[in-house]
Image (cartoon, rainbow over all chains, first blue to last red):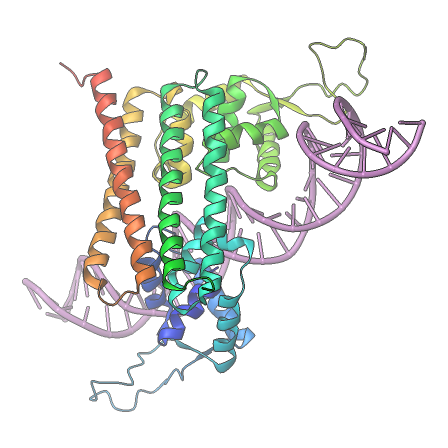
Length: 187
Length: 187
DNA sequence: GTGTTGATGTATCGTGCTGATATATCTCGC
DNA sequence: GCGAGATATATCAGCACGATACATCAACAC
């Protein structure tokens, strides 16, 4: 999941790890932040795979007086997408695995919806709604079955969980609706 | 986190792994299920620590005709809390670490609130509210700062995340309020 | 009776992420 | 000139997931 997020951000503009992490946190917001402990290994993995490339480290900064542009402080590793990386990213965006339906996966995919094909968007939204509907139904059933046996707090926890799931289903339905309106099926 | 959940469930009644997993899933509901890949190693760890104990495996079931009670099919490992385990569980419930404020941790702690001291309950609820308030404020600020630059989908994601966080803060406030009413501060 | 499905039940493995920690450097105010 | 805090990279133990494997057992079908 980090892979697609990193490629997506680097697709917009080259960046170094620290900035990547900050943008990741503000982009995904509610859904997970990703720590450096996974970010740096991922960067190395992507580099080994040839998807991303390190801009010249510039051990000797030529002219410290020049304040603008080519800033690359010592130790700073600025990454950018390679041609293969762009292609790979496009491929990733065009396919939908089951991981696109869980919390982190869905959030990540949605963050790059602007660059995702309309039919894939719809598929992801519907898959996620399916998943959340099932989860909500499961909780509703469980609640109905064991309501009497549960203490006040467990009940509160479950009811809040159920309401959240229901809210998300409604939200997804709206997104799906507007997705369908914007690009009608066949007409 | 699995540790406290397992101890808590075994504190109610002895159980084997498979049942533990099912109860865990229905108890925590929205908040995580825990897979066998972490459940079984945890059970072994708890057993090595002496907090839980295995009821005799009964390699030879004495009377297969007897349909009730002492059922222990071959291979079934039924665990129960030891005296040390009960003590340890009580200790865990009486302390509050920072892990009690994240999603999984908070859900787990709340699931055993009925057995938790009132002042600890309040501390956990307020810590969680603090955390969620900060998260919501962070998202609000980020939204205000970058609203124009964001595409429709990122905006939707962030707004939904913000609403969820705000809803949880309100929910927590209600819980805190009723916690304070039930057991007034000093008066 | 035999076959096949689905639930029960225990177990391991590779992979990925977190949270803590270490270590520098840069920037800004004082 | 100096300390505080942001910037920046990196590693590690521990935990959890998802997949997978392998058995047993009840039920119902044919």
